[in-house]
Length: 438
Image (cartoon, rainbow, N blue to C red; front, side, top):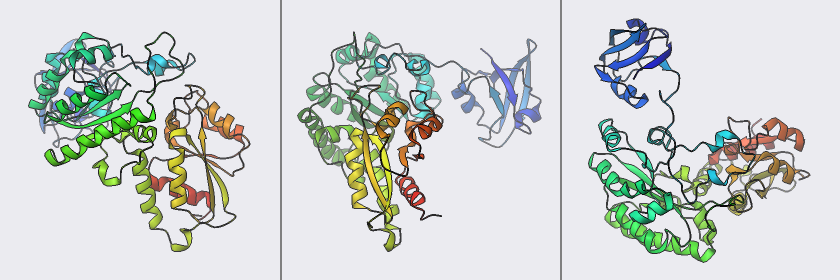
């Protein structure tokens, strides 16, 4: 196995050693390089021997550099190999529920533990061999993010759709024994992996030293499930049962493991009509990218930034500049209350929940709102500007339905302002739109 070097950074250790674009990286210190994980680990030392293939001949280059300094080689793909695709047939797979006109890039099903390490993607480990597990341990690839769904082997195999899913607990113990730490996730389906099954999952996972946390996420269902398994969303009472079971374990594990360990997503608290826990209950917000604590952190950051404002800005005033926030239906009430609790002088802000017609009304999160739904439902709203979360956009300018931000602005005939994910970003945007920061 060798890897084409497409460019070499100027004045880098690799260039000084004589390595050229067009060479093919083969080995480092005699060890074959499989992918970027190997490359990063093997190039950390101050002195190394880099072996490349040039015109079919093997050449050795002695390299000296600072420890952990980049070698300076660039390859055709960031991972130095293709993405490892999913081999599962999950009952709740979101990709299988995409609208027919969704872009093809959204239909790629990846399940690559290397992306878990580098980007926090959740993986099932069903396509990871024992040899690859050994490499994870050898390369100290930690922390990982692992989709568990259930620790009962037969139930997990049923949920994920492959007998290879039964190996999980052995895999997790092997990783833990090798010093690897990991965050876990369960996508919960009513009547399948909640209740007694969830109780078992929490008990067994919390007994593994390497398991750092467990996020609980309700199954996401779109309006495009023709021919798929019969699943449904949680009722309020069912969501409350999940939260109640979680709270029982959180109290116990805080005493025995010094961590609450179990973290239901914001969606569970909203569906249960249950207060979202306070800031300290989320500990380090390690599962925030799974929708765990997003609203609480937003409110905490917004409040702290608001408290730093001069007194004359921390009050509601009549006749403020009319502004709008367009967001998913699930977050609207929380954001509306937050803005009422922490008003800004000169701003009259209204929150508009957008119904998702592209995915279906059961999809209520802000990040999956399309440009068509946004512009169609915000047309005619009396405001000077519309604020949206930046997570609605890909590359900062493109909605899920390929409408551009500029097209949305043209349709609404007013500014559409993407706002960063942090609470202070929202407050800063409000102050800018009201003219306070000019």
